[in-house]
Structures are given as structure tokens and as C-alpha cells.
Length: 243
Image (tube, rainbow, N blue to C red; front, top):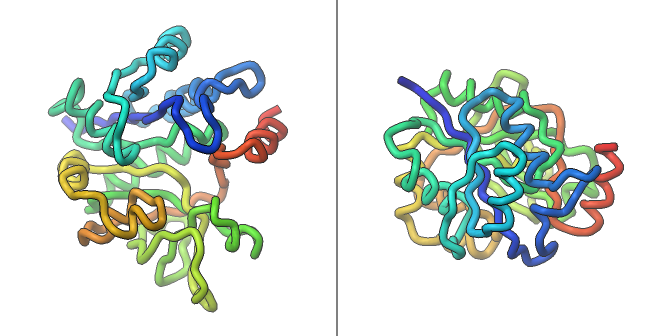
């Protein structure tokens, strides 16, 4: 039987915005917003993976399931894998890594990615949205991806690169990367066995480990851009948007 798990990796120890999973937006902790959006997607069973008991307590209080992980991991996907191996192995064949700092993600974007993975032969899938302006292209806090043709609504195209800053962007098909990954169980197991790669470390982008080890990542199109909360500025912006 084919079943999907949505695992949300999160922790209190963030470099730029400490304790951000528990920061309240409209009186609701950020991690609970993400948890609720994942549940609303109906794409699969939702689990929060964290090393922090405080997060576990908040999630459980709000009706969520959790897995306690070790504190240090090189990436969110490695934390997702630990949760998968501890509690979910052989139960799920598709695992969605949903980042815990996107409280305004649309539930149907999660379900769209799940359907695309089910309908295509693909190891890893993600989503992309349009770039609004030059300012976004030049912002190192916004992760971009490159494909070799215009991305349309029902496309699932191979990603050629992920980056924060690049200089050779004339006539390139550049999109705003959405922080969600879907792995087949085999692909996730394969991914975590690779050591951290050169570009993963240099760009601080975990997906580069897969790219540099010749794993194929495909992207679907979604026209709404969820804001990842990394700074106080992001927090102020998203608080206004979610009123």
C-alpha cells in the first residue's frame, strides 16, 4: 500500500532567529501554523521531528504527533530520516520534508507535490514559484532554482541548479524555490548516506548534496510564494500577511 508521511524538522537552536518555532504569529506558535497547514493538505500523516522537548510539548498540546531526534544533524532531511527510521520505516514509501518556518504555506501546494511524485518516476521533488522582481533575484536569503525551459502549471521538470547568488542569469529560467522536498523512501535512504558535499556547505543548501551525487530533483510550479521566516524582518512581514 502506498502511503505518505509529512515530516516537519524543527529545532529551537536557529542562528538568525533563535526559538523561532515557538514565536507566536497571531497568538499561535509558528510550528503549529505549519502543522495545521500540513494536516489541511490531507497528503499524508503529519509528524514533527525535533530534539527539543519544549517543541514536543507545544505540538502535542495542539493535537500533533512528534518524534524526538538527536540534537545535531547536518540538514533537515537528515533529521527527517532519523524520524523515519525510528518510527515509520516500512510504513511509508513517500516522505515529504516540510520546513517548519513557512507558516503561510498553502495546503494544496503540499498535496500538489504529493500527487506529482505519485504520477512521475522521480527520486526527489520540490516546488517553485515565479520571481517577482530583480530585488528577489539579488537577495541571498531567497533560494532560487534553474530549469531549462519555462515552467508551466502541470510540468515536473528536472532542476539544473539551486543557488542564492549567481552572476550569469541573462535569459535564464529562474524561479523562487519553495522549501519543501518529497523523497521516495529509497531516495531518502540514499541521500543521507552521502557525506556533506562541497556546494552544500558553500551555499548552505542541503539539496546540493543530492545534485552533486547525480540524484535527479524535479520541480513543479506553484503560483503562491510562502515566506520562509529567517529574520525579524521576515517575521514582521508574515505577521502582517497573516492577519
